[in-house]
Length: 359
Image (cartoon, rainbow, N blue to C red; front, side, top):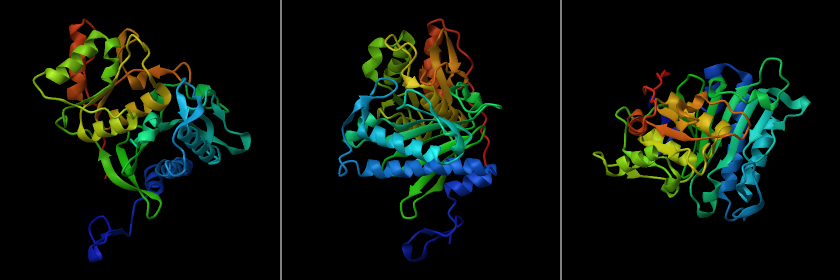
């Protein structure tokens, strides 16, 4: 048996003392309601895993014939995944209000099932890739309702400073949940299909100390609409003194997951076509920004509304508000900031968040 409690008899690996998601949340927070919430999210993600893996044989490819809250065509798996998350969260008994990318209006939990949490989520990020079997994911952010509130959209119209938990799940060759609590380290859990549980596999996830691999990730098909600073930064990545590699999946979860593990930068800026950006603030921008920053990275808006800001500081006015995103390691975000500086923009001093490590 090794130090992790893994039995290696006869070449087989069995954990006799596996730290599951529920066990980790209880040990970290001692909050029973938060354990129930994370269990509900995990359960819905296990259901989504099954649907994604069986999509072909279950005839779940293709469009559902409707559009979501932001006008995107809904896939059959979008609708199914959304129903799975809503049912799990409403019936958990600990949620007051839900906001989903797939629903134009917030979902108010019935009085008899109401709790204290407010959850915003994208049930199936990157679903345009699902028909060609490319990685997709789920993203979520968690708030507590305001004191005295019965649970309304106002409870979620707050900056990331009030977010108590953020995470994502990536559905690929393995199914991984990555999340963090406010001002705490980022941890990863892998779904073990033999026991049906998310097991703690990545502790204290941080960006590579030296910046890691030189990778830039963006949709250059939009470059004609970019401002000059973004164009110049991408040109620098492609032809500067350091040789960068382009990697763009088109599923935010997959691109961000790689960026944290390998290093590099992910860019989805505001542009002339989408001046407010294209990614949704509550269930894409804020949760990813919280994870990126607490893993030692930078989560910036780039030049947005006349100034460069942290994504985490943005306050949504509507539940489906959008935001631009420049996320990555300090080394690579600095390249973008240098180009803004050349264009005359006021550029803040870059400093990664202090990382608290847990044993």
